[in-house]
Length: 284
Image (cartoon, rainbow, N blue to C red):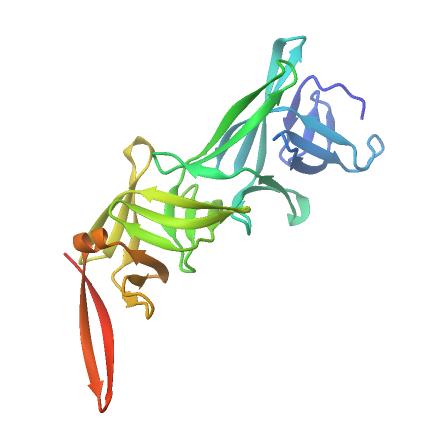
C-alpha cells in the first residue's frame, strides 16, 4: 500500500482509517519494539500480508479501551498527533502475560500480547514498562503503562485484578506458593518464563461478621478488602499451611499468627490408634 499516512484513526469496527478517507482492515499485533502493526487483508487495493507499522506509545488504558498515540513529523518537527482507540477486553494469558483482545466482526479477536514482565507500584497498581525507539531523534525512551484496578481472590485459587466493577476486563493470574505476612500478601508467580514474587501491601483485620480480611489501599486513598472468610482447613504437611475460605491455599508467618490467629491441638484416641488434629481460631 503506497498511500502516505498524514492522519489516522480507528473506527467502530477497529479498522484503520487513513487520511480520513481510506479504510483498511486486517490483523492487529505488536512489533518487538511495541509499535502497533496492522497486517492487511487482501482487497482490490491491498495485498494480503502487507503491513502498516504505526510508531508511537501507549497513551492510556480503560477497562475496554487501549489508546495508542501516533505522532507525525516533518523533519524533526511534530506536526500532528493522532490518538487511536482500540476497543476490546483485557485478560491474562496462560503465562500470566497481559493481553488485549481487539474486538472484531463475527465474534473473533486479534490478540495483542504485552511481552515484558509487569510490577506493582506502591499503590498496588499494575505497571507495565517498555522501551520505545525514536527514529526521528535516534534514542530510546522508557515508557510506563498504568492499570488502575483492585485485587481479589477467585474461587479457583487465583489472584484477580479487576479493572472496573462489573466490567468483563481483568487479569486472572495463576499463582504458586502464597505467604500471608504481617502487612502483605506475598505470592510466587510465573510471568512468561520468569519467576517473581508478587507483593500486595495492606492491613489485616479480623471480625466476627466476615472473618479474616486484608484491606488494600489504592490510588487516592481508596480502600478495598480481600475477604478470606472464617473457614480454615489445616494442611496435613505443615501446621502453618492453610486452606482459607474460598479455597485459597497459603502459609501464615509466625508474626501474623500472633496478630490475628490462635492455634489449638487435640489428640483423639481410638483403641490403639491416636490421631492429632489442628485447629485455628481468629482473634476478634
